[in-house]
Image (cartoon, rainbow, N blue to C red):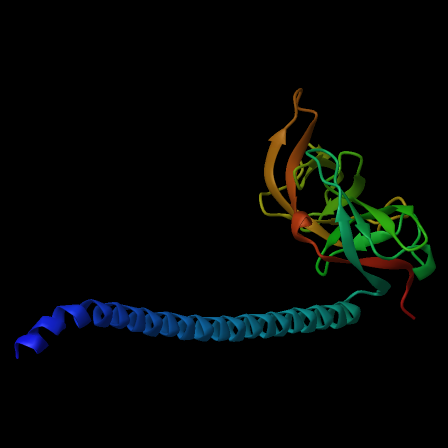
Length: 235
């Protein structure tokens, strides 16, 4: 008994060290297993996110194609769809670069629309690209009509995605919310294309004419694709 009691302290420390080593190894193995499972779950989650994104993009593409088909049924003009590949917006100048050019039949002064409204015209053409001047650009001018009353005015870009409608007679019937459409004057823009709505009205200094701020119907900063109208009417 005394011998066994004397040996106990001798074996106690090595056994304690072995226990801790074995325990550490067990925990390390457990951590490695958990980490492996985490990586597997993360990979599966990333794959699901990728597939979900593909589904969402396919849905957007289907919506886009439906809009094109709907527009073809409504608009009496042929048009060519183009993707926006670059934007050149500043406070006063607003233009886009599209992925269609002379090779696709794009020409200078060709009107450009969103799926719902007029947004500008072609001002430069390359072989495979073209530049679109937006109606909000300070260099843009469009003769327009108040759709409700047929009051005529000149629409000019003022930057920041907005336009100013000028030279309306001081006694003209113009109200907030009135829809503005192209007048078809000048040989560039077809008549009756929606442009936007009147957001504010004021009588200019001297009381000679009215002017108003027009917000384009299309979100000019959020465009991804445009439609370039051809000059010929559908037969």
